[in-house]
Image (tube, rainbow, N blue to C red; front, side):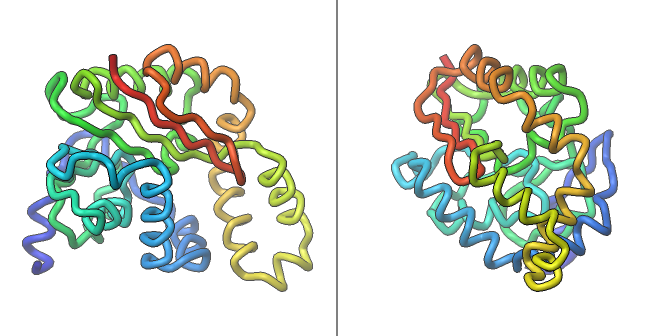
Length: 231
């Protein structure tokens, strides 16, 4: 696909914001795009994606540069769409999914029109909790068909993540391990929303369980893995 063709897939809607250049630089030091795609593949397999119908209409929220969409395509899904607030990130995507610059709190899809909505590390960027999370979850529930799945992978304050945070405070460790320094830098840049998210585990789980029938809920290695079904 040419750059011009890729750009035409990006439908610009109101609410565009620019991504942080400092965060992007840290991300590129933390992992390559292919490393991120492989990470997403492992996650999706663990969350049961190989058993989903291949003709399912799947939307990834907070899709960024599209590595999650690439992972879904490698699993055989062809009816893919992505949503992100950053047009500059979406412009980096070169796959076949149709992408929208849009707000997850006001999704550009009709009611009961999609089968799976996926978030891999975006909800912890919401600025106002719990209000923004409630609005996002209500939009997800509105867009999902009955029985459709909502798939979430987000940072979670497990003992492992607490240990990682402690190591990130050690300057010698950051100097010796560039990957650790990159992670610490990203966390520092997004600290207000990141910490607000980590400080509300009970409230977040309650909101998820109120709106979806829980299929999977696992807290491990610094991540929350959640799969819920729309009633």
